[in-house]
Length: 143
Figure (cartoon, rainbow, N blue to C red):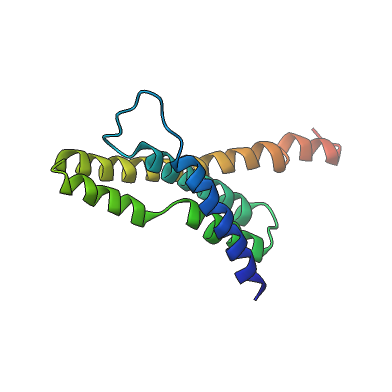
């Protein structure tokens, strides 16, 4: 039951954050492609990969908190259905090239964001958490 509370709280917060970012008007942008949704989904992909990599490979993160942040917060913050709806809206408006470009850019940048999130988490783990070989040798008194 506790995990459902975490998911609910995370989902509510993720939805509020999404709405806040979705309503930001980007100055001097003509809105051909839904840039806010693109930014939200790419940021969410990066954060999810960063958090889960750190949570599974280094930190002892409570399972309920982990699912609340990943499924709840980031699940509500990012959304595939909005991406699809906006793509169909572009197609309905006769903007087929923009629709295909939007889907392609979203997929490529989303995958790249996940990759960089994993790499960044692992690099941070190596630098911040795991001792270097020299530190281990120094503690042993031999060099």
